[in-house]
Length: 323
Image (cartoon, rainbow, N blue to C red; front, side, top):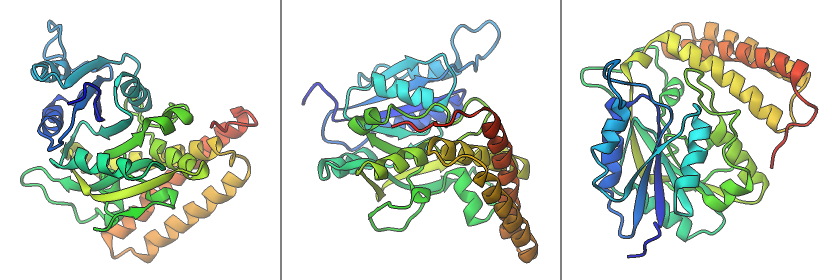
């Protein structure tokens, strides 16, 4: 068995001790025939059991499993998901980097499926698989949760057939996401202006990576057999959380356009049209609580988009593209 891992599984975590154990354990029991490693990046967790505690609960979860030599603990003091992902990439030893959310559980064949895809296609930059939601015991989806809004909880399903992703909006989700090191280095790592930062629900770092992959002649693939289950946190099952998530999604989309040199006055036209479309559809489907709320969230998010566009118009340099 070679010393160098054939694939590196990376978990970036911040104050998620309750879920982290399940995520790590699902990786340590992977049915993978070759050498692999698990890198946990503790992104400034502060979930201490008491003011007298010197070790966070997050660190305790990892340290309890460090007897497995495949597991590595890394501390990253600067909060930000993209920052933590870049740190994980630097600490990992493989050319294939597989990111699993700290509140997710990987299928036993997850690493095998991802690794096989990269071995068979040297032009593959990004690969990700199906994500099913794992509901808490006794909790059912509320009536106002449409299939579209369920994607905000991490659900991702393009069917049961492997397919190449050519539309940026269909890119694999960060819950279940892998990337080739050569490509990640080519684009300068995950963009730190995108991706969650503390309670700011920024996103779109995966969309930006896919956008650049397609521009640069790489390929992106969806692998339904690389399955992950994503825990649904009970505190997210309220409308306020979805509205906040929609707001930050709008801001993230605005930032991504700025990085692609699509900022400027045209953003106000796009944002205004989307607000009107969302409001109109909210009234059109007023008898369907799921579709109605989904479109209201969409319209609300576009107000966030316009607020970011206004700030960008005032403060953004003329060129923000990065390759």
